[in-house]
Image (cartoon, rainbow, N blue to C red; front, side):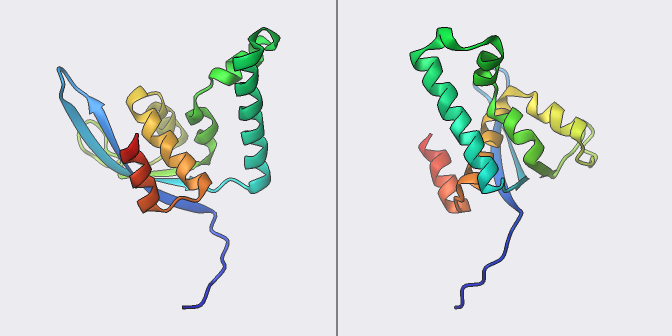
Length: 141
């Protein structure tokens, strides 16, 4: 089979998120998140900044400004939010379909139990993991 080079700008990743309920019960939600592939130069800048902040938090926390500390504590979902292009399927409380919008995305990312699986999917897309690699990495955590 020939190698065909094409410039994909997004990838869809299947997500399985567990919503905690009363006691030890959970409700499993399955959905797809379409994520934009971040340009290599931008991604390099993001990664270098994370490395820099991580190093300073560990070795010289007193040297960080309040803004730097806030950035270091920032959730990956804040960084990922502009690159999330779609989430499907989406239903409201009455099980009616709803359209993806910035307001819906904000509400989704505000849910702590959804943040980690979406952040993992974002990182998998940026690292170029296949769906199988991503699922294997999720099981390992």
